[in-house]
Figure 1 (tube, one colour):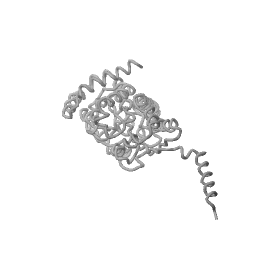
Figure 2 (cartoon, helix red, strand yellow):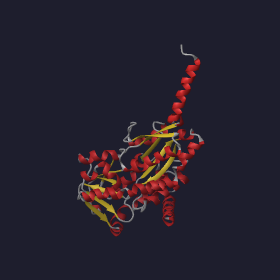
Figure 3 (cartoon, helix red, strand yellow):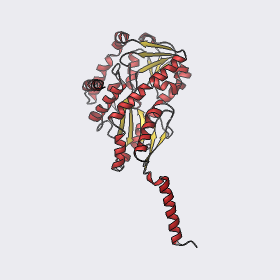
Figure 4 (spheres, helix red, strand yellow):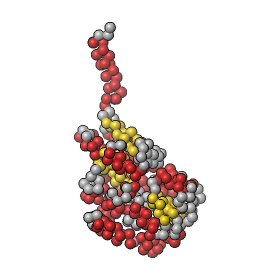
Length: 346
């Protein structure tokens, strides 16, 4: 018969073995959920780097399990609620997938507003911290806020002027992009990024608005062979958020909160925007190498022929924000000042 001392010795040996493998050192496992394939640029170059740094800096006490392509279920527009409800611990999503819920973020989606993704992402965090943290985003713990590089129009037929967009069905990523497309004469079709390839291949849409960097993972240069980009300020940008379940964050011990905090916030946001924008050039080169047609609208052309059509969006947006108790013009002015502040420092 096995005596108590033998059992305790066996347990002690097992405990020592567990400690040697570091299994007990892991205190927290976080589920990171997002909508892109694991090999896409944002998961590969930003989210995985962030998660790896958290794991390393915590000495293995935090483990982050990554779930790409909506593997935990649901649809991309549901991601923010998954973070709020605890379906996922951390999510990355397009803010515009839930139109109307985070109206202040739209200031950085206004047409020809952004010239540099790092500067805009810096401004976005500053605006979030000052105006959105305890209002629009009060139900989540926000880790990062950023925008992508210059928005591009990818179409079956070439687009050189706004008139070329007349009647085209173009996928838009957010309410603001859809308003932009309407002003330019296109028919906006709202859908999350993962739906784009099938919609293009079946002719449901004639084109899509996405930055260069994500075209590779979606095979867009193989599906359409015309791409319209803009020199100078971007025609449009999209805002993203990396957010964590508030109760999960609040329940962490202080030292692990510090690990999360030190890998999140202002510097991380500006870095993420820059990394995403830097991924544009290699993706663009793929389209060039395929022999696709790339139309680059000059700054002068954009200001003369495109900006006048979409400029009314600014006044409309300010009026809309006023109905929500938000000073839209003040947000515009502050965003521009913050972007200039970043540019002056870099």
